[in-house]
Amino acid sequence: MFSKFCLIFTLIFLSYSNFVYSNPKNTIGEDQNTVNILNNYFSKQTMVGKANFQFLFWNMYDAKLISESGSYPSNKFALILKYNKDFSKKSVVDETINQLKKQKTFNEKELKEVNALLNKAFRKIKKNNKFIGIKNNDEAIFYFQNEKVLETDNSEFIKIFFDIWLRKNSQNPKFTQELLGKTKG
Image (cartoon, rainbow, N blue to C red; front, side):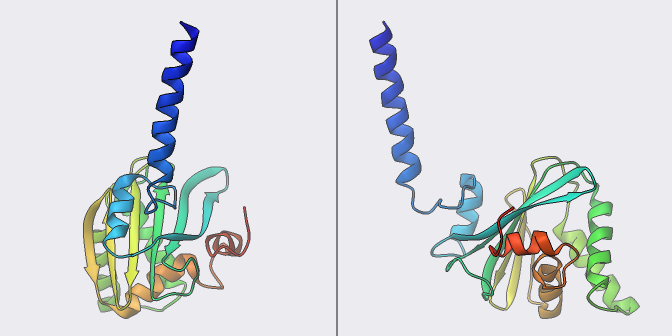
């Protein structure tokens, strides 16, 4: 009986191992839906870095930066955020606008345009929901829970949006350095 169990366990383990390691497209440790989305934009996916964002004692989200070459800067990359708690859509949009305002002074018209873009990009967030922002040369494509929610070629918005996490003088330099693969957390 024990030998049958060992044989079955070994066969299952080998089948699973073969599946995981024979799938060269999934080298970033993401679920298949995320990999499928990224396959539409990248011929190869390599993790640049990953980081966990915490505020006081709250574990907010995990982030990964992906590019074809595994380096940044790049004209083509993806930022994946996996949320570790629930957030209202309004709180995410408001906080994102606050972060954008740290980089640029907006007039009323620009602020309305940014608010409209962010309201298209974000939804009510539940724990383990995933947001993917892809910069593909001169455009950005945003996915929430595997659904394309926004496409834009507004170059200024694209730059300052991704710079929330990627700029040298970000609000959390340690997080940014980990995301850029320069230090490990």
